[in-house]
Image (cartoon, rainbow, N blue to C red; front, side):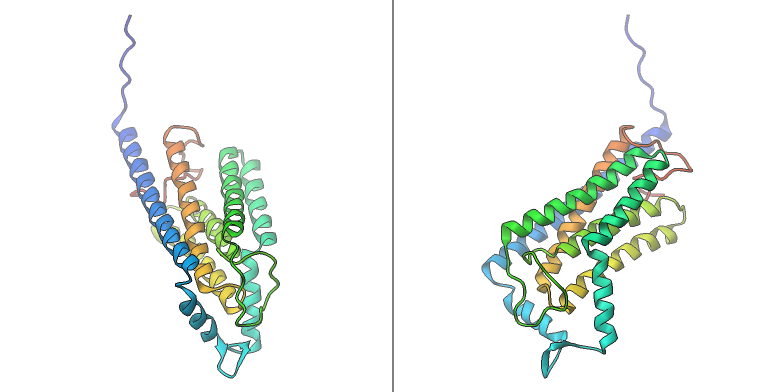
Length: 253
């Protein structure tokens, strides 16, 4: 006896197409960022970024004293505050709090998603640093303590992954486009500030920061693409009005 054919209603088909488009867009952006990192890393290995790195780094120092960052003393102190937003302690504390929130809210898959994204970014950043083993800048004094190699910037990579992920997740709790854009925009702005602060404090070359942005955003978008793919197959929390979904900010509303 033949089984009756499975009938998929029009709303489910539209949702499937929306999730598919979202996943394809995210995968495409991830591929572009990966290619950008590959090209930049080749330029760094060849030494092609040396002049650019030095010019930008010295542009953030006073002309008569390279040990003095441009701006008043409070700007330098603010730079240290901002750079801490990409530090291991802050990222671990923030990620643990978010994972705990999702876990206690019975959104276990979302909790695992955030944890995997953050741990993966840390492993990728550490592995790339060890592989390239690029020395830190030596043309200006360091304005913060450093203990690992330079390329790519670990602070920037972690900030790009963490704040992009959290911004997208937060955007699922609202329906207005402008609020979605606000959450994601804040995440991108914090990521940009962390990267700039690393160059301003003299602990990274500008190409390190560009690479960190590329790696962090690539990994975050790739994980987001995986989340959309899993949710389309019912392997994450179901889409309901009171609960965030991974596809909401990417597909047409």
